[in-house]
Image 1: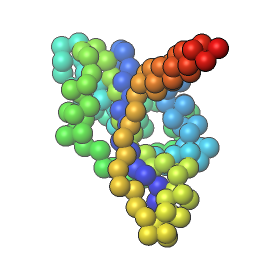
Image 2: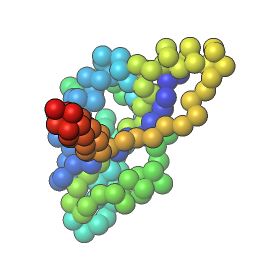
Image 3: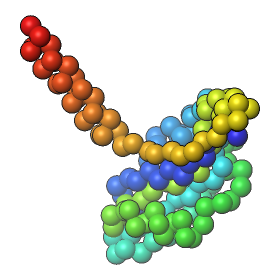
Amino acid sequence: MGPVECVVLAFPGERLKVAAVTAVADLRRAGQVRLIDSLVVVKSVSGEVSTSELVEYEEYDEATAEIGPEINLLGPQDAEEAAETLEPGSCALMLLVEHVWAARAVDAIREAGGRIAGSVRVAPEHVDQARDAYREAVAADSAVRS
């Protein structure tokens, strides 16, 4: 099995956009991830939190056809934690996924006696900032050497 991760995708408004659900479905169909569980969390304008399953929404039927979760592992406590990150009047799609693309490498690492000792998610904006800083440093170094 590859690494498993719980991802919370937050959106403005109290309804998910079909395009977002379709994008997740495309990842599963392409074999990039295995959807273990999912949960929709809505935080109303008044702050009330509600949850539901993707299969409860007819508008996502085409996007979610044949990609339902394998087992229900996300529950009320998970939803409450996700809701803490949401602004009133917004929603989130919680996904518990296996990174299938990494499974082969993980198997090889384990066969060699290794293990995954940790994992840290790095925000895309931090990667962009680091990339920009690196480019600036290289440019400055090139200017000094010229």
